[in-house]
Image 1 (cartoon, rainbow, N blue to C red):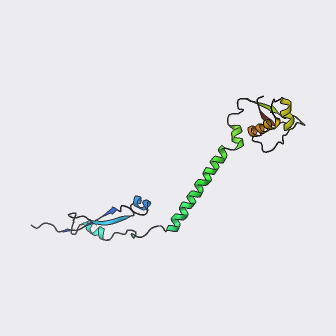
Image 2: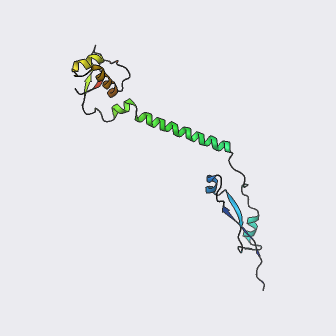
Image 3: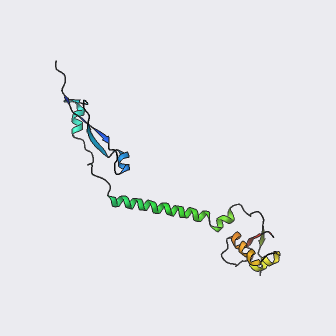
Length: 158
């Protein structure tokens, strides 16, 4: 009896140093390597299946322009999310809502006909009222000195 005839076979292995890491992970970037001694018996099912494989051509890849647009879009979305998070964290309303009234402060309610200057003046601070009004602006997240009757103001302690 004679030994069965062996034919050469090729094995697909991932290419090292591919230009596109995503393709290497997906297994699309492969190259043919002949393995000596790894033959397939003539007439077997696996010998006929390797010759007619329908794989994507080796040079098929996503165009550079598409990859660049995808990367830019991802960057813009990431920046927008970060800006939103920082804006929410450092807004005056977030500072006022953190833990209620801070230590060393007093909450007062503005009465009819009062201004911010009269509220600060009635408290009898022993320092310049302009400095106290600046602190009131910071504590309450105010952009102007306009106050309304019934408005609650956080004032610094004397």
